[in-house]
Length: 260
Image (cartoon, rainbow, N blue to C red; front, top):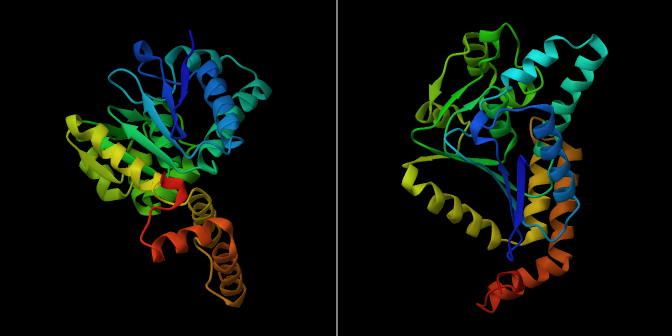
């Protein structure tokens, strides 16, 4: 059984679906390998405009599978390190994907599952969804997801929720900045598709370049070097075929060619 399902539609929208509903889409080494491989393929495919990360069943992702954790506990240090490295690589691939990413959170996102949400550019959650960085409840720590958690919700909030392991609801996730929008379960799909359409209406190269730019300027001093870099970036985009087409379409009051 395939545990990570990939579908790419005619618009260039890729949907990657966690498909272990009987295990609440919990991670094991096989799911991690499948997701990581699919993300590597998506990153190399210029025809893909964006990625939706979904899950089947009641839960988005319940973190680590109990049987997988039992196996990990019996591993020697070298094997345990390699196993942890595979999850770290998965998270990094999702976080650094050149295409924009949207997490569609229909249920519980716990531990590493919440980490996946942190790695996405946007997240829409049903108001019934719950979240937790619950590793400490098992005597573990949110190590591989930690950098993404702190970046997503901030150091202060991370200290509370990573130390207590407590669950919090979708409204709190929105307040913390973990999710972009919270909607009724029946409105989840329409809200996701609104974001999809907004991305498709924008220049595909511009969207990728904007995502890269944000990563490069975040947390850095606005100095002469950065000002020069951003000036070069906008000048380059203005002179690019996509930039020229976008400006021409705007001035001539017509849709740009990427919307046709």
